[in-house]
Amino acid sequence: MRRRLAAVATLVLLLTACSAPAVVRQPRLGESAFVYVQHGDVVTDLDPGTSYSNEVVALQNVYETLTLWNPVTKKSSPRLATSWRTTADGRSWTFTLRQDVTFHTGRPMDATAVKQSIERTMSTKAGAYYIWDAVSSIRVEDPHTLTFALRYPVPLDLAASSAYAAYIYDTEAAPDLGKWFQAGRDAGTGPYKVDTWKDGAETELTLKAYDDYWGGWDQPRYRTVKFRVIPDQRRAWQLLLQGEVSFLRRLEPRLFARAEAAPGLRTSERPSFQTAMLLFNTAEGPMSDQRVRRAVQKAVDYRGAVRALRGGVSPHSGVVPEGLLGHVPGRVPRQDLAGAGELLRQAGYGPQGRPLRLTLTYTEGDSDQLVLIKRLRRDLKTLNVTLRVRAMPWVDQWELGKKGGQDIFAMYWWPDYADGYSWFGNVFHSAEPPVFNLSYLNDPTTDKLLDSLPELTVTDQRTAQQAFARATRRVLDQQAAAAMPWVVNYRRAYLGSVQGYVDNPAYPDVVFVYDLRPSG
Image (cartoon, rainbow, N blue to C red; front, top):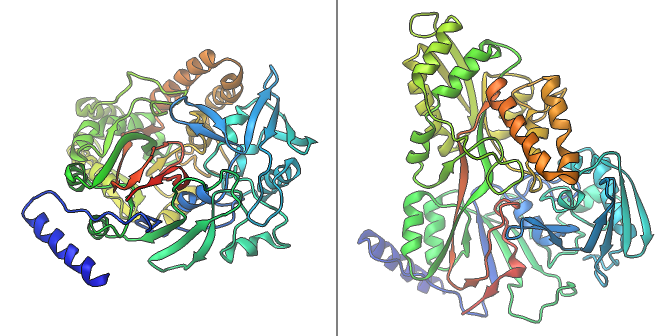
């Protein structure tokens, strides 16, 4: 087999050099492993109660949530819960559970187990536990029904579909669950369970089919899922052509164009719910002057960056991306260097005023952000502004950001669940100490407006949309707390033998492998 693959690889390289269509090897039907490529480490935390990072791509195949967000209907759909209802005031939610479901440990999944799972996640005070903040109590009505009492109304059916912190798991799997999970074990209900975890290995994580899965295995499906860490995108591309990997989650523009032309590959392209943002330090330093913040907003070359990234991103309007409640159309920003210069002049800076020095941090290795930052540094220089740029590992950047160590903080945001409040409640609501409010915005008027959004989302969506529009104007225009350059476009490439893939933007980069159909 190795000799054969080596020959195929040589042939592919020759054809690529001649710009001919790629030759793609398709696995035989019996080769049932689905191989997912990650460019960085897959696993940070295997505990479903605290997980809040890259391992979502695997854990959504191991664990299940009460509901699942449907990208077609844009509503919650059944998963472990078959139905749910809420009272008129949105303060009580009752869920009816699917029957005959078992955890990978063998324990039945019932209302008591669901209550224990969510209560443990709430008690961790880690990760995205705050999606359950409104819950005051959970009452078991019968083995398959439970009711949540809320302190204030929230769309709990959406919260229960969250990509993080909504997993249902067996809290009785071991006396010390933390050690149990971090040893490479799981206690989910999903179609796959953890087989091996080799931290630092290229094939870092392997999942295998859970034979007693409630959905059954009566149709052809992938029974093994492997997650390989391949930082070099071109090597990953060659392995895709050789049929050694199944799925690449994002390709740079030239490789994506070649994937579209390759007869043995399928591609998927769509805007995501992932937005880039530049957060401005509203609390201290020169950016505490609103005129300076507005000037930097105007100096951003929004269109130029989008063009330079050649389809990898799309222009962004407002704060919340299109497809979610809270999106405000008609607000795509444009560069205005003359307006930026005038605002700087009013603040005492600019070409005829004092020189201004600003510090920006961004995540090390993010080439898309760097395209934007280089353009911003170039354009600010013409306005007598020096932009000092510092690339940092994300964890280090975030820790510095929580201490207020920069003027501009570049980062991405996507929702924990498919709701626009995630941007406002996490990023622009005052918080002490700050977690993701890295503009350090502390404005009671803004907070009061934001606090009305969860209840309105449940009780009056038309009024909620109007409130989102006011919140957008408040944050971007009146407070000038951020610039929103683009929405990331997902550009996938995968083997033609993989059928049934659907991109769900509420679950970033997740492939629900059980829903796929392998073909020879």
